[in-house]
Amino acid sequence: MAAVVVESPKHAAAPSRAGVFALAFAAFVALAAAGWLFPRWLTFLLTLAAGNGLVSLGIVGLMRGGVVPFGQGMVFAAGGYTAALLYNKLGITDALGLALAGGIAAVVVAAPFAPLLSRYRGIFFAMLTLALSMVTYGLLMKLDALGGSDGFNVGRPTLFGMKLPDAHVGYVLYVITVAVATLAAVAMRVVFSSTRGLLTLAIRDNELRVEYLGGSVRRAMAVNFVVAAFCAGLGGALVVLSLGHIEPNFSFWTTSGEFVFVAILAGWQSVAAVFVASTVLEVVRSFSSAYFPNTWQLALGLFLLFVIRFLPRGIGSLWSRRAGS
Image 1 (cartoon, rainbow, N blue to C red):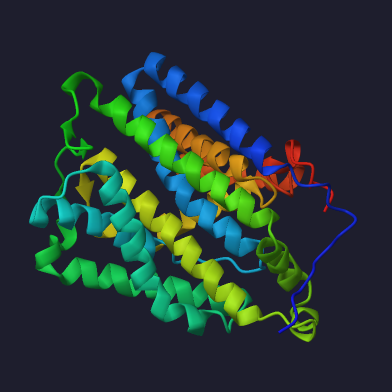
Image 2 (cartoon, rainbow, N blue to C red; image 1 turned 60 degrees about the vertical axis):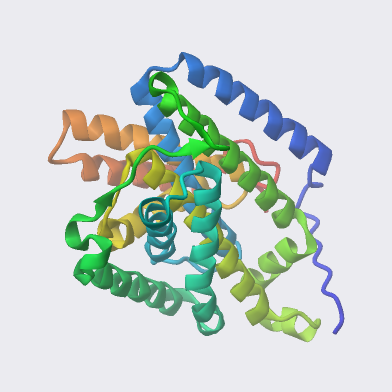
């Protein structure tokens, strides 16, 4: 099968991998150092933002191919429940191991549906993923073995066999989550700049031409869906470890909608914008619910409309060199 070469004169040259790694490392060091000075509430908020941002990062990968999933809550919950069950039932407490297990479990859950979903686009893709998420929510609500509607608690994780200190457990989880998010962001940036990433952009523009050139549209979309599931599983596990609790609402449609909200807010040009948008969502939601408890959703909606009106390509278009694409 012939390889597909996708080029566009509108795209600026992608940054070198060495530059991406150096920038990511500098960002991680800066965030880790700043986190030591942050108050506990802000550290916790940023931990959730980084964990949830992983889910939206996978959605951005799918958006580059022209589809938007409204059911990432399914794989988000799969990762979270896997981490919680391994902790409570098998005694596996290492934070990094639980996060990786959550990502793998999400892939196992998503992989059987990938060939089916790769056939559909537009509203059909969105509704099918939403249906899968809501079926998962219904099962989680009914299964007493998984805590039913109340869910169940998760204890404090360890790191490489060491117990986390009481005074700094929130900070350590923050650093772990930021580290995983940084690695995922670098990996996705490399993928987006690769031949497979450019193929995904070509699929969004003209699927028929990609097939004529020898590319497999369905295979590419199926792989993107599985990769997005892995990101969501990682995020679900890390969020559960920070919250110390898991419940069926992880798979509810409103949860999936928030991930899509962040992806739209960020745009598809920049991976860093995803985590900026996730942080913005957490900050707006936190302060809006504190000062306007009955209308905080309205505040989020107005904020999204403002961004769509003045930044139709998302926050990432403010600094991305691909904003003109």
